[in-house]
Length: 388
Image (cartoon, helix red, strand yellow):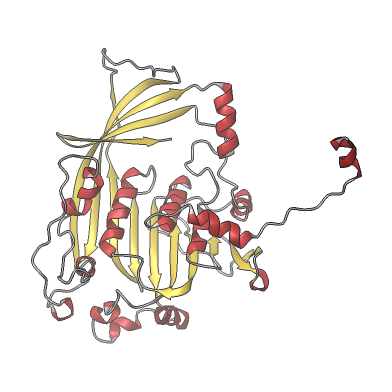
């Protein structure tokens, strides 16, 4: 029998072909979840040290007005009701997400066009390099702008191979409220579609996300240029604590050792237009049901999902038709909640074989330190958050 090595020497190389469209589709099929696109973009923003982020939902009519230089023309056609009528079913043409984190460097642009090329920084959450490609769940041609440059993605000849094109922007980017340039991700929708779920659910998701982010402080949602949701986080000073005498600081396998303890207070504020609550009315059960009417109700599923005392939200009285209501649907309702965070600074020491396996799987070294935090909400409710 001929030896494999001898056969190998007489063979010739052939490139393995990858159907990139099918690959992305199959990756996304295993990467599902509520508001997946925004979850990934928010985490990318936090990794880029952004403090502000915005989500824009735009109809084709609004895009046309922006292009013609009259983006606010819809407000002159009667009232704010005109801009919000039939919002549940009115098709959107584009989503835009933007943040004011560190502008893209050459290595960032290079990593953006490589599937599964994750962030090599072990202190950042992103590991597998598929977060950005979640955008392809809704669009075929995402367009990215950062500082002076842009990059567009497209399927050449409408086929299965993905290409990019890169160039210089004609004008400098807009600045965020903090004075930093926006990095934007424009997503023309593959198919026109309505809002991705109820606005109250999106507000709850954003409040949860901002609570757990390190750097993000302000996230807003706009529909055709109208701000309907704003979630803000204020952070108090860090207060060092002494290690309790009865605390064993070392884990069972000696892989983790608690080195420091501290406490901190944070405040999560929600500024929601009245329309956000109107939009949460559901007709599917044959009766109207109004969404949460206070910030406590807005966040209650976040902090009671693992508690035995959790209870479902109870419907309130059926509201009147908001289009005939004298109240302004753009009136902003304010509320907030205060949380206490107790954090442990932990040193991590792993065996070499585990380090090698983690590096093989995530394409970066595991962190040597991590933060283990308890979020204290009430006398009976403690919840664990692990951040690296």
